[in-house]
Image (cartoon, rainbow, N blue to C red; front, side):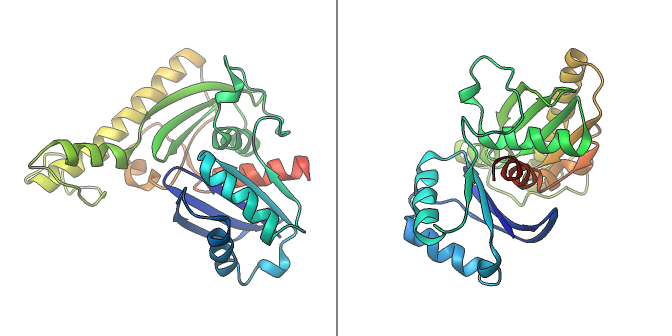
Length: 252
């Protein structure tokens, strides 16, 4: 059984795989200050039913401090289990056709590999996380670059912090586009505003790249706007974890 760990800026997502089948998954808050021992206790608790069956671990992180603690934790608590950390130098089979390949987040590499494996190419991955990432994949599985935009939650947080009479609201589809109160107005702006952003950026990418085989949505916040995005063709919430599974298979 393979454990895959995706450490993001806001949340950490874990899953166990038996071959290609996802067995269990968890989403927890990322705490860059957590020690290796705290992580060890947390992971052993979550994986209580799977610990004895683990045969490998694959991980990636966009948070350097959290990655350091994870390395120590894996050595201390899972030292007898082969582990692959997705970072520069790891074999992925994904050519990075950009100016500085070392700048690419490991999660974007995993998304590229998974999207090309599942859907072919050219394709576009829209990852709704702390930032909204648009990753462009060529027909040969290359990472061609993309677009980075502020994420849904941090945009809402910033608006609530800077506007005295506005506040954070539940991120759900409002009953109408024209809001009749402050909550509905904010929800409409979030849902339809970000859906319009996604469709606008995707269409501009396609006008530059040419036709694509798939536009894949992933990330924890994708369900907030997914139904209103006209250009998204597939939703795969575990895309990064699937990419980590594929990376492990290439390196183990």
